[in-house]
Image 1 (spheres, one colour):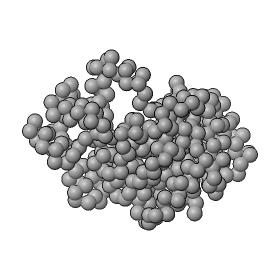
Image 2 (cartoon, rainbow, N blue to C red):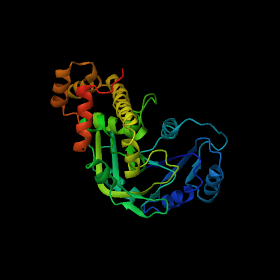
Image 3 (tube, one colour):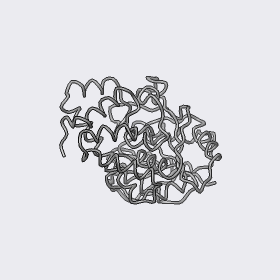
Image 4 (spheres, helix red, strand yellow):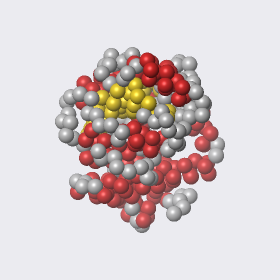
Length: 309
């Protein structure tokens, strides 16, 4: 069984060494760590080189090339660099808990490797000093973990750093345009063509700090949005439109009839009349994971408040 861990870095010198050490300390040790640096200007590349010389399982795939592709294309390059049975995605600033790899690999044995599969875990949210802020990001941020297509169309609960996919799913990812994030798109593919499986156990310490590209939805982040409602509504609409663009790519693939109908209903809902928008939301169960977010999502779609085509 070949296991590849994919790590994309960018100016990650503050926490990168801790992350790689947590990978080295995994109870499952038969892995290859492929690292691609996305044009760092700090000491990140030197840190990577040091680990490469110390551990033959670690490979720096663009040691002689400094090119910035962006996070999605960088992970796409890593995923398709070399074939494996299973692929894990790693951020540069978290800490993997010791049995993360083994837990996901054990779960994968319950499924056929011919069927696209994505497995993901919960996370403990910590501050930059690794003090626990939230024991469960899934329960706090999303209320429950998504495993179905209708859920993943509108809201993603998969975090890349605690996800694993098999090769059958990797083969389905063939383009990078109009994708919100690689973990969300892969989760969509898994729910549409295979299985998305959640393990109710933390796989890592998800570090929050000033340089996070994304990160958990903290109270301070929510307050900053609510005190500027015009920006908040713009963010909501951008997310809806972008998730529709992302889902549209699935229509080019051999979907089951009911899944095609669901996706088409979602991506065309804003073209429908007032009453048809209400009927579509109800018929297909389009929603968010939390009641309040579902209320906002549904209200915006029904009323078209602040909507711009």
